Length: 110
Image (tube, rainbow, N blue to C red):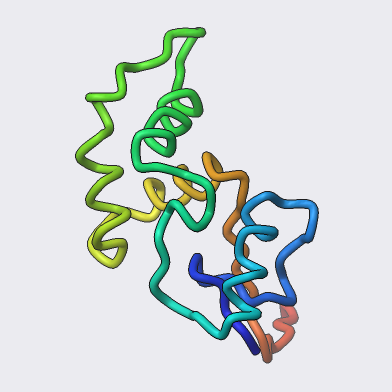
């Protein structure tokens, strides 16, 4: 099954999502794994700005400089970043993270 650069399987993506729509050409071209934010219609600055808006408290949006380095690190080396940062980036880009378990055994209380 094809996998989008964000790690989602193509069958799990919803076509109405702007992120999913951006991933489809990459899937069709056979590119997997590495991608450029520009291919998805984002810049590092825009992602950081959107994350700041998500993290606003009481209508107060934090300055971009507060999260710039953590967002850059998450984009450059996502394997070394806390999950909530990746989740915020995905939300800021109009996506979501979906976790599915397969072969789950039903557990009954005795």
